[in-house]
Image (cartoon, rainbow, N blue to C red; front, side, top):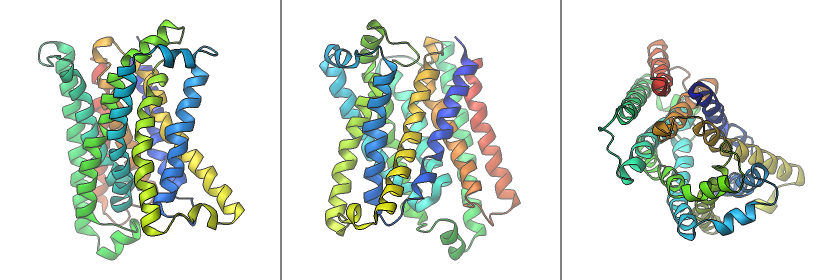
Length: 341
């Protein structure tokens, strides 16, 4: 087991996830609901199936699906559908709060709930052994880092006028954004539940020759499938309600190609967080596998706030606020090293 390499792999995935909204910003002439579902076709359908197919023995994906327990597949899709609600509101949280603050709140709750609930659901007593206590310690440290980042966001709000907030985040709405981000965090944790319920699928993949490094990909595609259904229904509803269904054909061919390209890039970057998490998780001690979710979410928050700085979302916030923000990011990163203990 190589826990340090595990952290590095998950850091790469987190960097990709925190960056996925950057190419999305390059999409032109489409409403939110239109570009959200198009990038979702890539991130939740095409790319997960493609990588599952590429990383198992040739020709075995169909057999893995056939031989996996039906209950595991349905539970993975079910929790994926619940996670889809989190995915929807996650996008809205960044729309109203920006990349940095939106991801910090949503992913912070997601990290805590998604890390602690699956082992509790399986009957594990986290206070009974050293690994459980370390898991609790790691989540507590990450939540402390998230609280500090939230404090930095509060300082930022005091230092900026409404006009300056709108300049940094076009549709900035603090109260609405925070409520949406809380809902996003709670529901997004269902992705972790789906991965847990889909574990028998991974075991079937291993029995059919898949490498441990990539076996998780066969589970991920079922969870993302459930999430796609939820997002598809809501986005089509908005297309009809807002009259934006014509978005897909109303733009010129060059703009359409531009939008498809950046949707594909954004969707692929989003998927890579779980691709690399699956690789990193396979290198962790069995007693600390559940902590992989917290590592991924904590690093997502750290990298999203770095992007927030790059995208000038913290412009004019003041030196004190930036120092507090960086302190929170450092604490988040430190929480990921608990597994080295």
